[in-house]
Length: 114
Length: 112
Image (tube, rainbow over all chains, first blue to last red; front, side, top):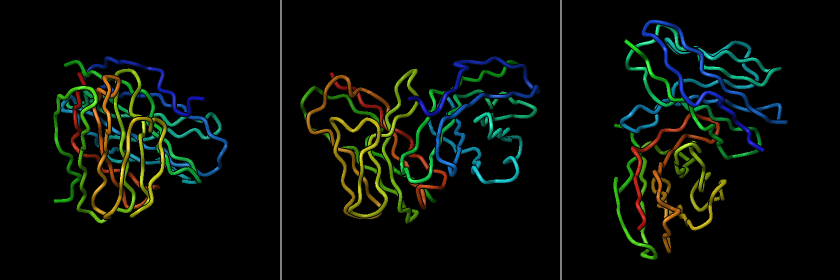
């Protein structure tokens, strides 16, 4: 069964608007970690933000925040005030406790329109 | 500069000709991993290593081998490459398996 689901293959957003990229996950483990990575057209993978399942507050890193809804098993990435440089592929990933593997979603291609 | 270095960056080769993609990190990380990225499939983990001499299969290990003789190096070996192994490969490392991974720049392999 797929553990990470990103339902938006592609998104187009006007510059300066906020963006929400969806990610749902499936695990029976109470302890897990969720990661978001950005992959620009140049190809490198850039770590953006991390959320632990026991963290009391939603993670934030600059313009990135994670809308973590544990009961719904969702970990959506929110980008505020989008910029042209935000155009990239975005991947959600999860690792659950007792499993050293990291599982990625299929990604969302975000395009910011000037 | 802290980095994960993969070589080669690009390789075109033929079916059955053994090849090795090297990966080296200079951050003294314990956890290292290999992924392949294919369109529409995201990144899939091939093998990972928790520490020296400790390796384990990821989700798509068939046709690949790895070794971890030293902490810094984690080569990916394709003993008999086939066209379905044409892909973009990433090596990554992190201090432990719970922490964000640093990725190499990727290796694009084409097996003809």
